[in-house]
Structures are given as C-alpha cells and as structure tokens.
Length: 537
Image 1 (cartoon, one colour):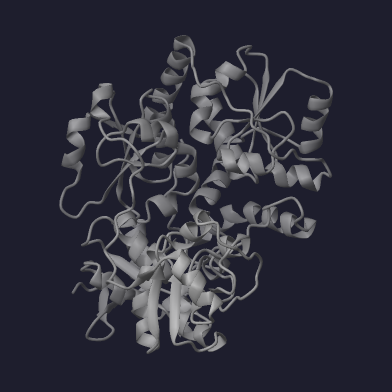
Image 2 (cartoon, helix red, strand yellow):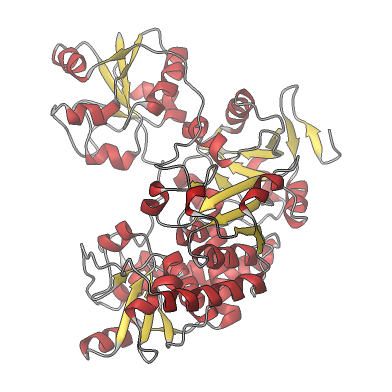
C-alpha cells in the first residue's frame, strides 16, 4: 500500500481527495468513477469523474477500463445510500486489483474544497469554452443568421452533431456534417472561398470546436459558429426544422482531400500529436499503461472494415464525450482513419485536452481486416431459466407472473410489455416494496442482457421463481404481442438519465438560458479546480 492509500476495511482501501488531485495533476493513470445513475451524477461531480452506473457496471467496465490493474477510485452516495462498496465488490469480481473507495466520498470532496461540476461531458464542454476564450472563435447571433437565410445569401450552414440529433431539430437549410467530417467535407459544400460557413450544434461546444477546426485547418472561407446553437435559435423566437435529411457529399475530390490533409496534419503536429506505424501500436501497451484505440470514421465505414483491436468512436463525438470513451485519465489514445484528416483533427483536440495522442500512419486497405460492429466485452452472467414471449403472454393472461423491466426509462416509456414495472437495477431492493409480491417474476430489458445480471440480484431479495424473457422486449415486439406506453408503473424514479435542457423545442426559456449561463461559467470553474491539464494550441 502506498502512502496515499489508507485501509478503510479489510476489503477496500481508500484514496484521499488530495491524492486523487495529485494523480490528475501529475498525469498519472487514474479512473475516478461515480457509480450513481446519470441524473444524480449530473447534478454534481468532480471534473474528471466518469459515470459508471452500478446498474450497468458489468456491461461497461471491461470495455471502458481495459487494464485490470488500473488505479480505480470509486464513490457514489445517493439518497442516504452509499453505492461505492457494492460497486467496488463488483469491480473486484471482474478482476480489477487496485480498487479504492474515495475517502469520505463526494461529501468529503466538497467539504475539503473540491470543485464540483454540473451536467455531463463536462471536460469537453469546459474545454470548448476555453478554446473560444483563447482563440476568440467567431460567432454570429441567431437573428443575423436568419437574415442571411431570408436574403438567400451565399451561406452554408453545417450541423456538427450526430445525424440523429440533427434530424430531431435543425436550423433551416442546414446540412448534417458531424464534427470530425467537417474539415474533410466542407469544401465540397462551399467550394467558393467567399461563401460564409456557419457551424451549429445544440448548444455551444461542438459549434465552437467545429468552427475552430475549420479555421485551424486553413479553410479559406469566412467561418463562424451559430452563437449558442439551437438553444440560441429558440430563445430568439425562430423556428427549427424537424426531420431534415441533408448530408454532405460522400465523395471528396482529391484536391480537397489534399488541402484538408495538409491543414489537419499541420495543426496535429503543432498540438503535439505523434504519428505511429500500425505495427508499433502494440508496443504502446507497456506494463502500467492503458491504451485506447479508436477508429474515428463514421460507424458505417467502420463496419465495412477496420483495424483489429480498434473500436468505433466517430471523431466529433469522441471529442465531445471523451470522459465516456476514455475514463482512465492519463491513458494513451491511438486514432485511425483512412484519409489522414479525421484522425489528425480529432487528435489535435485530444492532445490539447492533455491526452498522449497518436495517429496511425497510412495502411493498406487489407489491414482493415475486421468487419461489423465490435460488441463491448462483458462477463457471462449466471445461468437463469428463460421463457419465450408466447409463454410469458400466457402467464400474464392467467395472472401467473409479474414482469420487471430493467431497460432505460426512455425506452420503457416509449413501449413496454403491458403490466411491466420499470426498475433501476441498483435500486431493486427498494423497488420491490412498490411491486406486488409474486410467486414468479420475469425479467426483461431490450435484449435481456442486463436482465440476466439482475436475476442474481433478485434471487438474493426474493424466494420467488425468477425467469428471463428470451430475447427481451425486442423479441416480444417481434412476436407482434401487445405493448403499453407511458409512465404506467414506475417502481424506480427515472434517475437513469439526466434530461438536458436543450432536448426538444418545448423547453422553458428559463431552463435554456440557465444552461447557457452555466456554460459561460465553466472557465472560472476550471481555474478553481486546477486539474484540467488543458493547453490551447
């Protein structure tokens, strides 16, 4: 045991707030994890705390913390219950050998003067604010952009979010060009260097990073962010489109590709990104070093063929959600593409965020020998009897079973088996007090993967028979069986997801303005916290 570790009990030592801060400042590898559900996590947490809900820990740990001897520090007090010891026990069962509890938990972090942040993906959002402050990223207010549209001006609006987000709501005339694609593809949309290019997202971060990416890569066009994104657009009383489907051209001319490649390579080099041959990547996995390997192209391109051991993480979302994809702060990150543009641009931002970042040099297409999606690694749950959808339907008709649904609450509200109760797995014991006692429970979720892990929990809480629905609720739907919608039977509160103030267009203006005010305050929080390690190139 090191001098920074203290023995909390015979099972799990503790790590102090000061020791966590020192590890972060020293760029040592550490995973500080918050095991509450997303909503309580989003209310307040340290800057580099990554959300690992206890409910899904077995499904996420191996993929997100790949090295079993990683230093892990756990906390998670919520509504009078400390989830951290339970989570630490799960991590130990999963093979992790350096699991610690945060001494005194989050309360001690706060009492000791530790800064806490609200919302999700805070490292990336605060970094975006710092970039705008340091680089004076240009932006245009919503009314001015509306006037350009109304005047049919020479302007191209590009939406830097995921395509599904863009389809939910978008700026009129905007084209979907997710963040990492901007530098590669925007010249196809705006070949005339006099054309004004405007980048938007829902709020601020991806529009700032997207705009600055185009500027950093040397795009000759005038470029500006839509100030405050779709939130600013809505606050200005302007109308959004819904269901738009405009995408950037798939083909990129060789001249435009070369211009993009030169600009991306230059900024990557200035940011400190290192280039590495593919056959040297394995050598980065030294003892004590975590290496994340990400393919930053689109998911469709990834599925067609990718390098072995790489996982899909489209570059724009990787920069936006770095705390999710790479929760081990201090780890190494290796990026790959097939154009020498998207990896370099993504890497330029990650390096400025303090990550040791590498880009794989060009490889022959045959090296991308693996196809399809890569499932997240997870342990096999204990065996549990299963029941088919038709059998469950008969049981329900006869009143012989109670269904517990462990899916995400948004999925439950959208559609669920009639009579099913929504349950958050980590809160199962409490939820059972709100559910009629039964002699037989059937557990489900989307595919029943999480339900199989929940079955062992239920067996510890009840003597009833426990079954899992074969294929989960998706199999029930495929069988054409009846469905129910809405918040019909919530045995657990919907704390599994933090509702963003900018979701949808019917949010109160006060909530959206409060969100913007929060983003404006992030730089001051970074300064008070002192662990960010950001350097704007």
